[in-house]
Amino acid sequence: MALAQTWSVGLAGVQGAMVEVEVDLAPGVPTVALVGLPDAVVRQSVDRVRAALLNSGHEFPLRRVTIGLSPAAMPKQGSGFDLALAVAVLAGARVVPAAAVRELVLLGELGLDGSLRAVRGVLPAVLAAARAGHREVVVPEENAEEAGLVEGIAVLAAGSLRQVVAHLAGKAVLSPHVRAAAAPAPPGPDLADVVGQAAGRRAVEVAAAGGHHLFLSGPPGAGKTMLAERLPGLLPPLDEQAALEVTAIASIAGTLPPGAPLVTRPTFEAPHHSATMAALVGGGSGQIRPGALCRAHRGVLFLDEAPEFPRAVLDTLRQPLERGAVTIHRANGSATFPCRAQLVLAANPCPCASAAGDTACTCSALERRRYQSRLSGPLLDRIDLRVTLPPVTRAAWLDGLGTPESTAVVAARVRSARGAAAERLAGSGLALNSQVPGRLLRERWPVPRAALALAERALERGSLSVRGFDRVVRVAWTLADLEGLVVPGTDQVDEALGMRLQRAAA
Image (cartoon, rainbow, N blue to C red; front, side, top):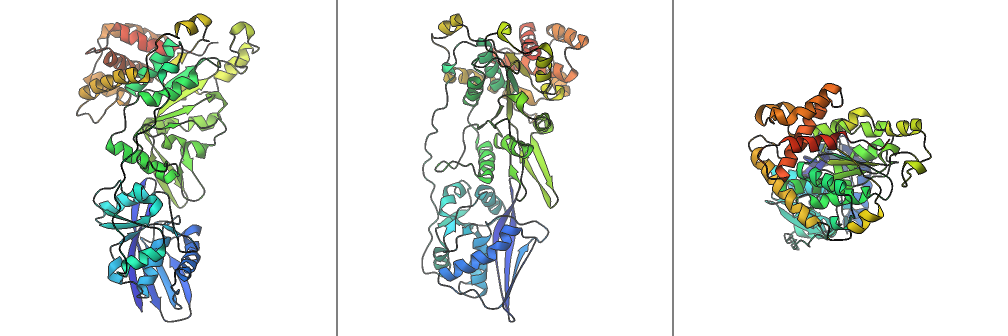
C-alpha cells in the first residue's frame, strides 16, 4: 500500500477552503475511485489526469487507486484540482518524493497533452492557502500575476505537468514568480463631454460623494447613459482590501483583464434589460457564479431602460442593496458574494420615448402610468436621488460648449467630501453617508430641527416615507460635506428633498 497527500483549494463564493488530496494505491484489480462529493467536472478529471500522465512520459498506476478529497462534506467543483490529483498519484507511485508534496498547494487544469491551463478563482484560492499557513503554491503560468498579489507565500508558475514533476524530483527548479510593474489604468470617459444638464452633473457628483443610489429619467439623448458611465471616474481608487475583494470576484467570474491582475478602479456593469435573475444577482447550475450586481461591488451597476427589466428581476435587488451581500442557495450548498455597489437606474418618461416633449408624445396618460409603475415602490424607496433630465435645447447646448468641469475637478471635490464624512464617522465602522442607519443618524449626528421643516411637512403629507426621510437627511449631510459645512442647513435639506421627490415627467 502506498499513500500520498497534497493540497488544493475549493471555492465557496469568494472564499477559498483548503482541500486535502489523498491518494491510496493498493494491490487489486486496476480501478479508480474518487470520493469526497466531486461534481461532474472533478469526476472527469480522472480521465484528464490519466492522459496527461501518459503524454508526459509517466504511467498511470495499474492498481486499485482511491482518491479522497477532504473535507468530504464540502462539494468539490471545477477543474482546478487536476494538477493536485496528478501529483498525488505520482507521489503515491514514488515518482516524486511524497515529502516534497505534503505541504504543497497545487492549482490548475491539465490538458490531455500535460499542459497546465489557467483556472478561475486563483486569487481567493491563494489567499486561503496563505491564511492556512502554506508557504508554496504551484499555479499555471497564466495565473501567476494574479497569484502574486498575495503576500507571504511563494508562487511557482509552471506551463506543464512535466515541469512540475521535474521540479519536485530535483531535476529542475521552478523559481518563485516576481510580479511585474502594474501598467497605468487607461483614462475613462470625462465628465467634460457632457453638454449642459447641470442638474444631472450635480446629481452624479452627490451620488459619488455619498455613495447614494441614483435614478435618472429623461428622453433619449438627454445624457442619462453618459452621466452614468462617468460616475465611476468620480469615485476614489480602491484601497488595498477593496481591490483584492473586487479582483477576487472578477477572478471567479472570469472577467479579470489579462495583464492587469489587480483591479484598482471602481468597476462599471451595465447588463442588458433581457438579463435574467441569475445573470443579475448570480447563480448557475453547477458552480455558483457572481452576477452583474456582485461584479459591480465597490463600483457602479447601471440598469439602462430600467422599466424594460422584468419587475421580479429588479425586485431581487432590494435586499442585497440593503445588506451589501447576496447569498445564493442551491440544493448542494450556498455561496455568499459581497455586492456593495451603487445602483444607477435610467428610464424614458414613457413607452414611445419621445424626445420632442409632451406635444409629440403618442402615449396616453394610462400608458405612461403603467410604464412608470414597472418600477416598484419599494425599489424606488431605496433610491436616494431622483433626477429628471430635460431635453438638451440649442441654447443649453451652445452654453455648454464653453469649459465644463472635467472629471478630475469634480473628483477632487468628491475626495474632499468623502474625507469629511470619514472623519465625522470615524469609530463607527462606517465610511459613507449612505451607509449610516437612520437611528444612528438621529442620535449621533442630528440635523437642526429648523432645517428639517420642509422635509417634516412632506412626511406629514405622505410625500415621504420614514425611510425616505432618513435618506433625505443622508443626502443633506453629503451636500454639507461638498460645501465644507459642519452641519446641514435649510438649503442642503431643501436641495436633498428636491432630489428625492422629483419624478419622471408625467
